[in-house]
Image 1: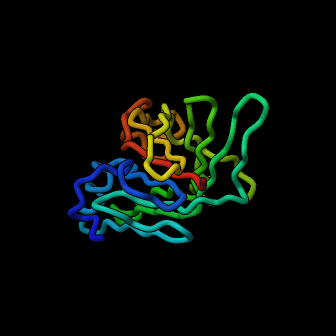
Image 2: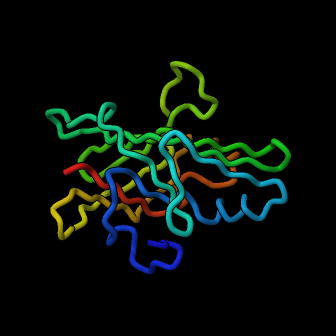
Image 3: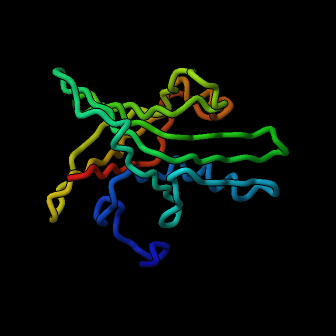
Length: 173
């Protein structure tokens, strides 16, 4: 199916287990307009649709949850943006959605890929379970906002709380 002309929402499509997220459309468009702007995907991330990225589900790194209901949904993929002759570099790799009830924090690997560095909280989200016809487990979030640590990743261009694109998570049934 050619998703570039598909008008159904990401939540309405049957997804493979993984994370589908456009990050921030205006940022991606900005990088595309730069004379030297580049984007790359790998290690399990692929572009889908007209601006979304898909990160594969990583069952081995995910957790089913603890007694308090907290769980981690882990994903594989490395997405990079660059431009301004090396002055702009944004890496969003191997995201985890750390869930506590309906609240979630999407964290990423250290953008500089330093071994043993703590994960970076990038955005917060309020999750809602999405009904599906096939019984799969799908969660969506329209309320996605940049964290203080995310401000640094985007070179202080966006303020804490800046809205980011909605995301959809499909988990294995």
